[in-house]
Image 1 (cartoon, rainbow, N blue to C red):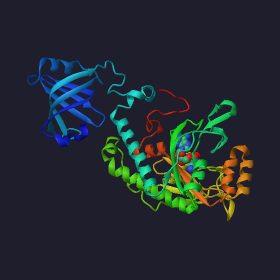
Image 2: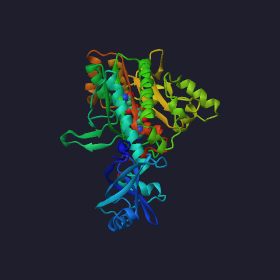
Image 3: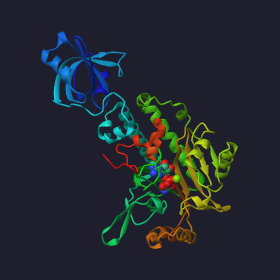
Image 4: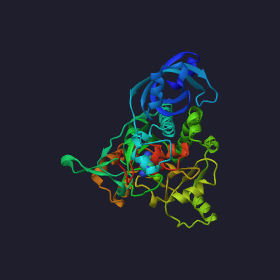
Length: 427
Ligand code: 4AD
Ligand code: MG
């Protein structure tokens, strides 16, 4: 593989891949090979190679599958630090009129060709960072004594409000819904195992056409028995520090390809600032932002608030009215939910939403009724409060928003291989 070439300096190697680009200047042909791990310039001198090879190098179309052979040379000016003094070239399969050329294309055109766009240097860098984040997320929880628990995707009821449900017919049992969150099941898991996390796709029929919303996205959701809101925030800051610092350490090359200024990412260390909703509203007032007290924070509000800090900020104690039915209210003032959102800097907004859960049977039952949720569908969830209920908390981190933030992208559509958006479900 191209990434391993440092072990083969001055040795002959044969590599398989695709033609990324080519140039020629008289007696020399430059073939840029792409193999998924990097790019390699292969230099063919007319005098050193057969006529067939020289002609083949000339005729190859972009993204032709090829096999090259040559000697590895140190070349400090080349991207990976190496070049191939090449003599062998075999065509594996042709490619003509590849739809994505080195010239600029519009975003919708690229999205229509997402299956091919994935081959570009920038997209592969994003995919590698996403992969590293996923692994860091798993490593963090695995090393902290959490058990991974996979929740169902077809569910009988809403978790995060009834307005964003995808519904489907489920045989003789009526409607089923694509899960909006694994949380309710994670709560059952926490009562069984103490500390669990779910990590999988979640779905929201979001009518919003913003740079932060997908209809299908991945969420990781830890849930911990005997944890209160403060414990939840402690976990969130420890977790964020670990995943961001891990990516900075391991994915330097990719971040460079994306031209990411990592100054602020380096600050992602605990303790993260913690402010209440009321303090957040004060910040909005000081910045002359029009805002009605009691509303949820909007995207612009989040940007103004997070701009006051040099690292992610945790906003806690939101008005209970704007938050989910399962959140426990503050015993000191039941207008507030024991909720926390973590807002990323640089305008990325909410990446984590979490809370302490309502653990009292009667209170939870009345919340279910207030929210007009079907009680039968929540009987199993109420059982968790009937049989040995304990204080417990958790949160959900949106993977794509986190990838967008870490990579410095201006839209979540490039953070997932095949994005699902309100106006797009292809390719
Ligand atoms: O704040 P949310 O809705 O919280 C929950 O779903 C809780 N059940 C989590 C929990 O406590 N276990 O979503 C959590 C995160 C958001 O902060 C955001 O990062 C991401 O999920 N998210 C989305 N990402 C992309 N597109 C969407 N439509 C998203 N909706 C939420
Ligand atoms: Mg939220």
